[in-house]
View 1: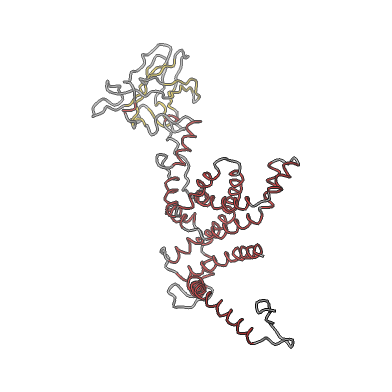
View 2 (view 1 turned 60 degrees about the vertical axis):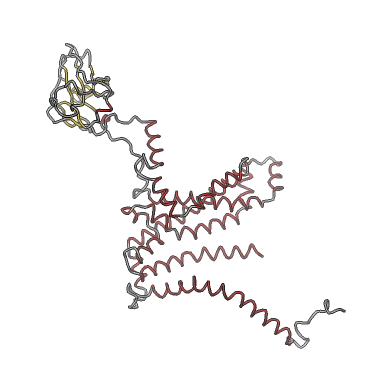
Length: 447
């Protein structure tokens, strides 16, 4: 028997291990430790030491001199700002990973059925290349309240104005109170009653004259009707007589005018290009003239995306834009490894695409979906950049999360690194179960 095929016994018959085997085993362990030592040293310096230091620092006061035990933890759970951060973090953990996993699954399935799948995946994955800082600045502009700058509000205003007419003269008001006074609907009504045969002159200000097409002309009075004019009681450059239609003054077209009797509307007309209006053929009596509030309502300015009520959903929307590509790519990789013969057999048996998706695709992808979900849970617990950049100062407390609260308490004005370290320790404790679950599933998949 040659030396190449002869086995070296690892132990003698009496149970003792030969010296050569012990030396080889010891040499293998030393080699393994020597190769792992640089990584272990780096891991200890970047992870182990900060964790131990944070735990130790959380037991001291703000200055780090006095030992306070668990006082920082008690203060943390008594602080309303921290409790709100815990609540918002819980919302993030429940909503964002579930939405991302669902979106990634849907997009991964759909991309298999389109011709330009690679280009589509590239387009969805591109936001991953954008830093959270740049994405935060971008979405701060996207959510801007001004429709001229904010894309979301530009869309909201366009959709609103499609189905609802905007007011003709927002902000217009009477010149004095001798002729018009405020009515209950944010509009204006005449102080004096009018009778058939009378012409009413209604002057307003607060309107740019450049947007008015024609000079004001009061409609001529008729014996059986009420006529009048609504006009801009202002002469560019000065001059003119208040309450009187001057030659340089312009009429207000498309103004809704109501004729009222004892508080009830009996007729409605719209002014012409020169601001004139007519109520013909009305019965004898006293009537009021009213300019309803819909003529003067401020234009619809969209949704307050960065307000206290919607700030957290708005930031989650920005987070979805960034991370949907990550979820889609991972789930798509798992989808490509599914046994095609199983799917084809189901189609041959008459199963619909929805049945295949629900009963075959999703169960087979369960391990991949769980890994994506747990990874995203760990990631959202650490979210900081987007919240800090997108949320304006007055509403930042409404969008606060644990990672941001830890920074604010420690460095953002609180200057209490003991309390900040306690928040960091709690955040670590919350992340550990998700990390353990991911490691366990990874080990199970490698067996």
